[in-house]
Image (cartoon, rainbow, N blue to C red):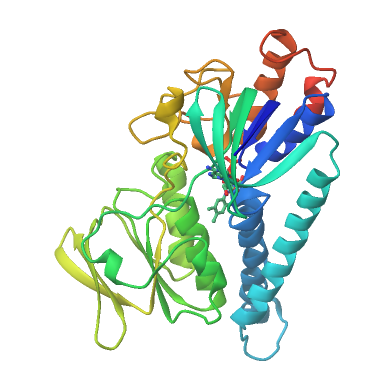
Length: 358
Ligand SMILES: Cc1cc2nc3c(=O)[nH]c(=O)nc-3n(C[C@H](O)[C@H](O)[C@H](O)COP(=O)(O)OP(=O)(O)OC[C@H]3O[C@@H](n4cnc5c(N)ncnc54)[C@H](O)[C@@H]3O)c2cc1C
């Protein structure tokens, strides 16, 4: 067990953690970036980047299928999901590798491949991916551990082969009929994508509108667009149980206004929210407070209940700041401002805030 001390430690190499760790290192602070899986976090590996490459493929299929409307005639459209997947993997690999290259080229920044958990307010135990145990302390700790797909407590769901937002992008075949459990952004993106690839799609949404936090008129307009594409959208429809038929079909029993109905699909995507990755952080050992849904509580400069420990990105509770373009760039800027204003906890930064924004 080796004890090391850093000026700053960032846990999680996600959208916020990578640029922040680089900015901290460039400003002369000895910095460690701890990542248990792959650099780039959700956005590059399982979120924004792969979905947008697949959305582009789906759009190509959609336009091609409609080409006759524009007076352009060619043969029937076929979609090869293995080729779609290969293109997606290549783009993700190239983004991840360029991220990794930039991290490795940053002087004063140590990338540690492993999982971190708190042992005290600003001390961490790290189990490296090579099986080594490290003990790390820091003047400031930045938690950027993100979120993961939820596993809702629905009877029978654990016994059916359900896909999540990560595994659905690894399919090598086109679902004949995709059932989508959850009508928020992630579910809707995949619903439209797979409809455009050529699947039959049914969305099952428990709430009375799609995208629960959205204005009702916007949500209704989105539902109309999806229905025009041929997607069945069920609103106000809780799922009661899941099962698999002898023929391998996935059966979802749902509660509609007209009574129980059993939907049958070839594949099921569960897109029912994203709880924060706090369960392995051992927040109690540090005295870091979280809310009822386990998101870390932080003030307007993203400092947690423990001085010198900050929470950034999806792991942080509450909504993004109103003036901020994204959650993650919102995270870096106020911390940097604080860094410049508060010499005792983070020494004055020679890097202006404008340069730290992601
Ligand atoms: C399917 C999908 C599509 C999306 N599309 C978009 C989009 O188009 N545009 C957009 O703005 N957003 C999109 N998002 C959301 C976006 O991906 C997230 O908001 C963003 O990645 C959050 O960044 P983050 O920095 O909070 O954490 P993340 O990017 O999730 O990074 C957290 C990192 O921390 C690591 N980690 C966790 N716990 C530990 C630990 N204990 N020790 C060490 N490492 C740890 C994880 O391995 C991970 O790499 C999408 C999300 C999904 C799921």
